[in-house]
Amino acid sequence: MSHIKTFADCHVLEIKVDRAAKLNALSPEMYVDICLALGELDRSPDLRVGLIHAEGKHFSAGIELDKWAPIFAAGGGFPLPEGGIDLFALSGPRCRKPLVMAVQGYAYTWTVEMMLTTDVRIAAEDTRFAMLEVKRGIYPCGGATLRLPQQMGWSNAQRYLLTGDAWSAAESHRTGLVQEVVAPGEQYRAARAVADKIAAAAPLGVSAILKSSRLALTQGEAVAAEHIFDDMTQVMGSEDAQEGVRSFMERREAAFKGR
Image 1 (cartoon, rainbow, N blue to C red):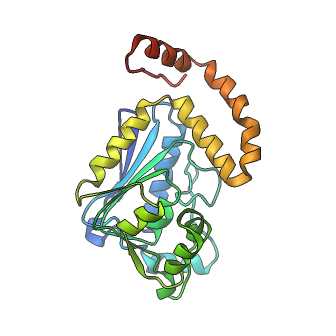
Image 2: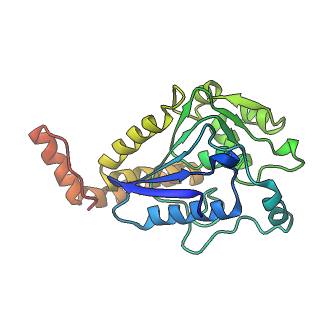
Image 3: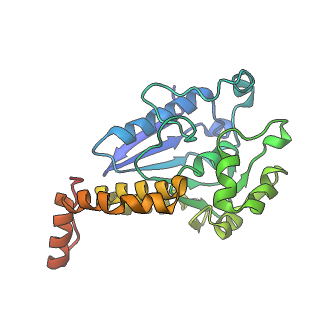
């Protein structure tokens, strides 16, 4: 039985971690299933945004270390399946669709590292984040050393990476790791509302925004700037751009088709 559930609705693919009895500890099999879900999201023309959330009081207490330790020790990295997209964005291309994530309770280790590959994050007030690896004799290998300093600030990140100490939802909000903090139990609703707004936006415009933003992040502003109007020409020639103008003139909500 898979502990990763998927559900497609209104252009949103929900990816739910469902192993609450084990505090949603990530097994190698769960990793594979999440990667396959991201691959489905990336390829499907009907899916516009992914929503990642978890069943139970906690998002996850961490990885199933006894199963992962031999894999890490052998230097094999993460077992990316054919047709999948690495949830840690370390192997191969990233998912081209935006990802929204809702977290609560324990949001430890791999939870933080996956969160760093998403685009909008909502946290319950009771969320406790932690990178515990240095307390287990290892170090993070899912991207935290690459992205947490970038997204949280160097010294803020090292404060937690080097000690293994936990930090709060309020601290994550202060440093920009999460965009909204809500009452416990409301994180899914708030995240779904954001996902629905993204899904209602023009898909080609959303795609171009992610492409340009990621290019600026990885290759610099000058490189990204060179491509802005190349991509704009394609977007402006779309049916969606025409619909956007019509909806503006007619003072109504636009109905975008992604073409």
